[in-house]
Image 1 (spheres, rainbow, N blue to C red):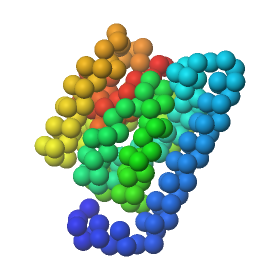
Image 2: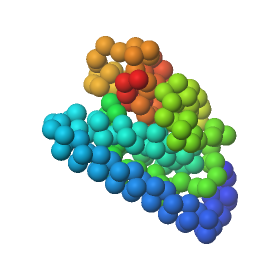
Image 3: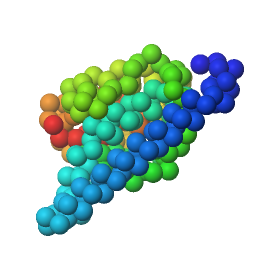
Amino acid sequence: MSDAEEIEMEAAPETASYRHHHRMTWQSIRSRYAEALGAAKSRGLADEPASKTAALTVRGAIRALMSELLTRSPVPAILEFLAVGLEWGEAGERILEQQAAVLGLIESAYPRPTWTKLEPLDREAAEDDARWFAWTTAWTEAFGATSPAAQAALARDTASLQGSEMKVSTSPRRWAPWLTSAAVIVVATTGIAMATRE
């Protein structure tokens, strides 16, 4: 998308509508998560397992929304998001705490692709770990090819993951990539993906 196209899209009424729709989608996901979290705690689960259990109920919706935002937002906005939106958690529970980062990405997104022809996933496809893995792999490769800054962000986030969450013994068969704030698909590939159990 050229600068002129971006200026035109920023002023377009469909952009405001598109962003409003995704703000509502995000709020709906958070509300469903809060309800599931309350239910999990009422069953006696402690905070951490309750959070993970609740996040699994909205995992497909989170992945679908993020696949949309990560293909419809300009590269600079994605880089800003990656600087603060790295933590997703095993089941996606931590991304739900990244309200400002996700809303910032929504406010930069457009109703048509900005830098890639890669299509986002619908909720059903995003829920499938194999399809999600394939999508995040493709996204990582495409995003890394956009600029040296993107490559650096992916490399930085890979190193960060290797030093923290991904320290546990993992393998691509045991873990599905979680997300990619920049995208690390299971430590072996560049990017950010937070792993969730298959």
